[in-house]
Length: 166
Image (cartoon, rainbow, N blue to C red; front, side, top):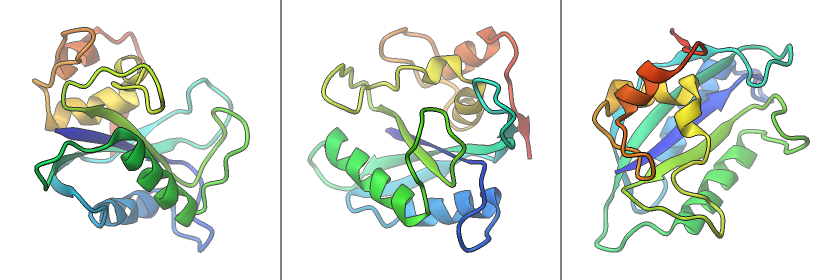
């Protein structure tokens, strides 16, 4: 299973709000060769992390399975996600800046990878309520490959920072 987290807190350059941008980004992900969507979470609202006065984010997680016999190439998938971000008006400036779209690979099966990018599983996913809440909704029994804990357990262990469902 491949889990991709989506987030946005700025309007798309054409005026779409962050929620519509995320909905449209799921449709764009459906066009990535080699992937078939099997689940999508509800949408959640969360404050920016770290706190910065930015608008709240809209977040969700989508699950895919590969459609071919070959494993998904993490670097190739990352490049595809970055092309989608760019198409949706993402401009990379400083870390944690507000953005029109953010797509992150949370995990690809039980792959553990430190280099090269992307690091898998995502190095901070287990600390972020805006990832864990939607992930636990669609895959509560998914186990973090490094920590051995389920998404539901990781979410329950968070101290604050749990987003609200839209």
